[in-house]
Each structure stands twice: as C-alpha cells, then as structure tokens.
Image (cartoon, rainbow, N blue to C red; front, side, top):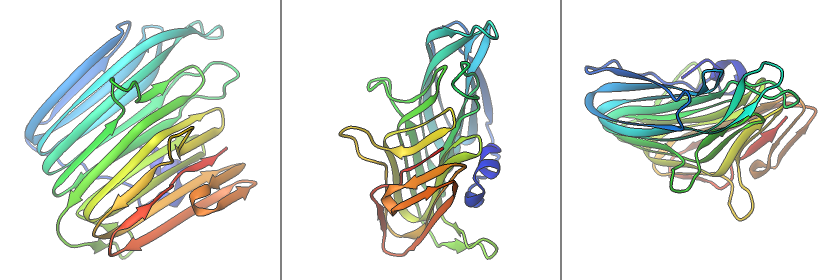
Length: 295
C-alpha cells in the first residue's frame, strides 16, 4: 500500500501488504481527462495487473485512483468518471466531481488492493490530500468492491470532500495462523485492510486469520476539512460490520487531533488522542459497528 498507513495511523503499524511478482505483469495508465468516463476491464492467470488512474481535466488532476490485482486467476473492472466541474477562482483551474467504481477478485491465492486520493480543494474547505485505501490478500480466494454504477455508490470526490460508499471485502484462507513475535500481529492465510486518512486524522482496520471474513462498509466513509467519518451509517443504513469464521485477529484504530469517537466501543475522547481495539478470536467474530469519527 502507499505511505499513508504508516504516517497517519501509528496505532495501525501492523497494516501492510506484500504484492507478488508473477509472470504476465501488466500496468495500465488511465487519464480520464476531459472524457466523461473510462471503463477498464482485466483478467489473467499467474500474473499481476496494475491500474493507475487520474481524474479531472487538463487544468487540474482532481483525484488519483490505483488498483492492484494478481494471483493464480484474477479479474476486475473499474469505471472512472468525471461528473462535473467546479471553477477554482484562486488557481484558475477546475475541480472535477469524480466517481469511481471498483471490483477485483482472485482465486488460487493472490491479492486485490486499491487506494484513492483527493488532490484538489476549494478555498475555505481545508486542504486536499484525503486518502482511502484497502485490500485483501489470501492463499485462497478474495474480492473487493467499492460501489457500483447501478447503485451510483462508489468513491467520489468534489471541491469540498471525499465520500466512500458501500465498500466490501471478502476473503477465505486455509492453513495455520502465524504470530509475528515482534508485534503480536496475526499473519494469517488471509488478510484484509481498510483505512481512511485526512492529514493527521484517520482510522483503519485489519482482519487476518484462517477461515472466512467479510468486512462491509454499509453506508459511507468521508473526509474533508479536518474531519473524517469511517464506516458510519446514515438514515436507515447501519454502521459497518465485520463477520468472520475460524481463527484470527481483528484490529481497529483511530487517531484525531481534537475529538475522537468510536460509538460501537463506547469510546469518546475529547481533546484528541488515539484509540485501538484488538480482538484475538478462535471461534469466529462479529463486530456490529466499527465506525470511528474524528476531527
């Protein structure tokens, strides 16, 4: 993954992925430019695929979206779209409204990962640089998705903020657990990571183990100005959940300079600070609300 994990979320230093070097490596660059949208599809065996996407137009790169996918057999698709433009009176460029929908899966061992970064912000809405990242790796099967065109939910950026809707990770892994003697982290047959950063504020999770695990962001994560919401519900939608079988370790962490809340764990820190929750499980795990908010 990119540098955001280690810099912004010291409480989740255990997060990380290793991407395999296999035959048949392919890298594709997609610059949406002035086009309304670009669809990219891929599939392969015993290889890797990398998508480096840029959204915006010739006057401003509003967002970057990257996808990595590889394994014994793998496939996926990405739709990157500019849905409108907002003039920036200070720089003279245009900030795009962007929407990205991602899907990647693998069998026979592999990985599927993504990150997205908001690059431009309108004056008065704080700095840009918000980032969401996530992925799954396993010796068996895995899948990630972030939204779909049919539901109009995905990763969106604008002049004011970043939204991440309806993101889900699934993995199955077979074999034994290994414990890192230095960190106590589980190095399992499968590993799921998901996080959101906004400067020094942010939250993230990891779930590693053997068996099956599903991480669902039921409604949205968002970031803009100095605030962030991670895995939060809204209206009739519930907060995000983790549902795992078998054995493993679940880690959730958050960091905020002013206020930090994790309602599912009855955590409210006024004045800023760090929060970390670690669960080692042997007969499955269900977390009904892993949401974290802060500023």
